Image (cartoon, rainbow, N blue to C red):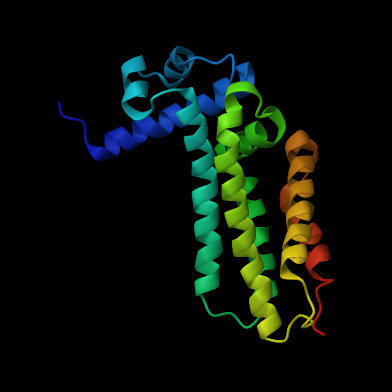
Length: 204
């Protein structure tokens, strides 16, 4: 029977889900395509149908995190909103609350933020991942530019510094949570922590 596009996509997602587990348990360097195939309950040929090697799987995992995130940011920028800073606060809060209920996303972020040092063969992936981070930062900064234009932030605000500040703050929350998710009530704490940061961004 000929495989449908939907079947192929389900297989690809199963491979990515399995790769998160195997990479986390074994490390990317020690993991093999055979292990990933076995975990995904597919043939090794099925893995090769979608990916040339495990580094391509690693990159695809990163892309699966980055692309939806950027899409959410850009959708927000396209929408009219009376308070761009408040809009960004809402978006950040929503993303954290979703994380608390998405086990695959949580495991993938743990892999990239806590389990990966980009050494040896992974160094070739680092350039693309840094580029993706810059895209995210650039999109974030537009919210602050829009807020300045609307008079919600002082005219001398540096949007790049403010964006870096938000990124560092959110990354800190994320790492604290990922290091001990069972003892960090993200649903309760994330809105309060994010609100605490954004409450300091007052109109001039």
